Amino acid sequence: MKLNERSVAHYATCNSPADHAGFLRKRVERHHHHAHHHHATSYQRRWFVLKGNLLFYFEERESREPVGLVVLEGCTVELCEAAEEFAFAIRFDDAGARAYVLVADGQAAMEAWVKALSRASFDYMRLVVRELEKQLEEACKSLAACHKSPRRSSSSGRKRHLSNPALLPLQEKPAVLENGYSTWGSGGGVPAGSACPDHDGGHMKPPPLPPRRRSATGSATGSPAPGVSPAMPESPVSPETACFSKLHSWYGQEIVALRREWQERQKRGHP
Amino acid sequence: MRYNERELLSLARQPAEKAAEVLMRVPKKGSVLKKRLVKLVVNFLFYFRTDEAEPIGALLLEHCRITKEEENVFSISFIEEPERKYCFECDSEEQCQEWIEALKRASYEFMRRSLIFYRNEIQKMTGKDPLEQYGISEEARFQLGTRKQ
Image (tube, rainbow over the protein chains, first blue to last red):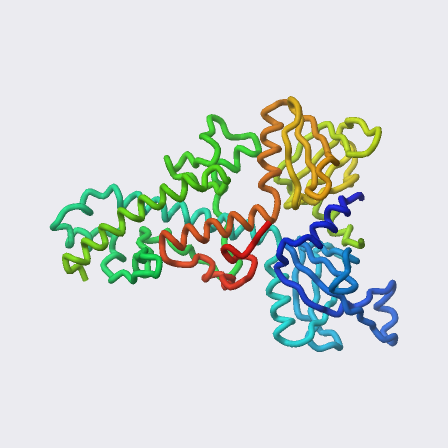
């Protein structure tokens, strides 16, 4: 199978920052390795560079071209029972596939590599991005909800604030951050149940695809202007460059308004 | 450069983000448009002869430029060799635009920029770093303002 190797090698060596890099010793895999247990296993010291879901290795740190590449999709990274200390292995789901056994210089280096490699897959990154996208939409919604709530602007609104579940966390004294924005208390001001969905490191359910991604597979009709999610009028969540300035000014307005509200509330002696 | 071809082949069999039959031309002298099945999986575009199970080739979609060419046609080129273009002719202008959008978002680098953007926005709105719960807030690849592409 052909691969655009020249471009891949260029990506490996260009000045885009690496996600992780360092020397590792790579076990040399021989044919019928398992049958020759009495032969000494040998290791080659290589300079490894992780970029995204691609693990490159070079003969020397200064080498201009990688010797090899490991595509990190469909693999697990685990500590392994090698004779060597600080050894770990990249194993692929595919039955019969070889494992890459790597040896780090020490405990800290090994842990750092295992951590970086475990999270290197495209799918992992995509999960995190989708999760954050969802969180941002929810933060926008609650911001919009606060903004539109009529109780917010009434002077006798204190008690009503306390009884409005959407605003409950606001009764805590907001800590003012360096940039002048206030927090909304532990709940982040987001309506109960929608903040911080339950999951433990990596076992989260992927959120449903937002509408604009569906359009990429040709199933959306009457799709809104690029970058605008139909569920949220005027709340573009796409990070396309065209939207950045619009996004920033939109959020900026909302936050300035909220901050003014909080400051007024504090002046009124709100706890 | 060695690479784990077996795993790439296995990746080519995974469910695709997008797949279609198109006409494709590689940047080689004298090459012509040929009917191919193209399949987008993570940040790779695999291309197959329409009746074969194993891809002829794969394109890693990092540091590439997706360009609209003439009607129904787009191209993929790589930043170090912008004149060497892989051309794809679609059935319709709509299909062409869909592929351009999908391929532009297909890189790991694009996702990284999205993540940094969302992280920053959420942090500004809520005062909380959304990456803390995953224990990855300190990783270099997610830092704001430290990356120059």
